[in-house]
Each structure stands twice: as C-alpha cells, then as structure tokens.
Length: 214
Image 1 (tube, one colour):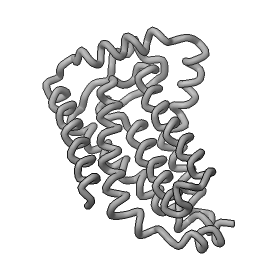
Image 2: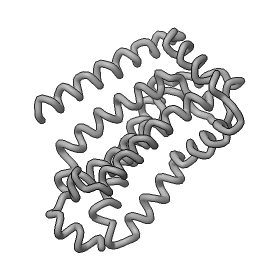
Image 3: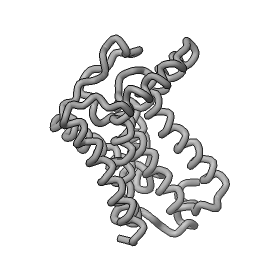
C-alpha cells in the first residue's frame, strides 16, 4: 500500500475511533446539537419533499435493483455488476455489525420527517452510497481514465449524490451528524482498500472495455 493510502487509512481509522469512543460514552455531543440546529433551521416543504425522495434512492432495495440489472446484462456483468455488488455487500456487512455492536438509539422520534427504525450508528444509507458510488468512480477511472470528460462529469454527479445522501439523513432527523461523518470515514477507509487490492483485478485495457460495452 502506498504511503498516501496508508495515511488516508490511518486518518480515517483515527477519526472513526474518536467518534466511536464518544458514542460508547452515550454522550450528547455539542457538535451534533450545533449542526442539527443549523440544518433543521433550513427545513421547508420543498426541501423536505426533495430529501425524502432522494434518501429513498439509497434504500437497500434500490441498490439491490441496480446490482441485479448490472449482473443480468452480459456487457456490464464483469466490469460493473460483480465489483459493485461486492461493494454493496461489504457495506451491508460492515454497517450491520457496527450497528449491532454500538446500538446507538436514533435521534428523538419527534425530529423524524420519515419513518425509520433500527439503530443510528453508523448510517447505512451514507456508507453504502459512498462505497457503492465511490467504487463506480474508481471503476470508471480505471477503465476510461480521469481525462475523459464524461467520466469527470459522472464523478461530479456521484460525489454530489454521496454528499446529499448523507446530508439528507441529518436533515430528515433520522441520524446524528456524527453517524454520517463516521460513515464517510469508514467508507473512505474501505474504498482505499478496494482501490489497492480489489479494483485492479477488474481492470482491462481501455480498448477492450470500450469494445465490450458499446
């Protein structure tokens, strides 16, 4: 693993560990309260409709549907279906185990703008969107290169989507900001391992990928 990747992993692990420590203390973090207050002050009918619809695109049913379609199509099965399904499964396993370990209650139900059960830490929607669409970003870069204009546009869209999914979970009152931040940190950590040890196994010369996908 490159020095830069080791640094990213170390910083993400440190950040996640600090947040997890405070969660184990069952402490009401001033950071959470401050950020929640700021985000809740933005609430209005239009944003609520938008974020309610957006957050459901990160439901496991939506991700599963994408995986099934990519796996079913011969042209996308190897290059995208398998690695993205692996990414989604990895996220599910990690956040399910961590939720069970910490069992952090969600914010007060009076703050919820949508129905949501289960534990709060970490945010499954946030982690899955980062790992799933982050893997897509890595795959596109691996196959087509970052200089490709369509790839850069797709990167920007995916990055914005990843951020907005996390933001939506706070806005809708079903997660603490530290849930989302911890999910981003853990997701980046997992993506770094993917990039180093996994994505390269699904890369092919650009010409061959282009020929098979066209």
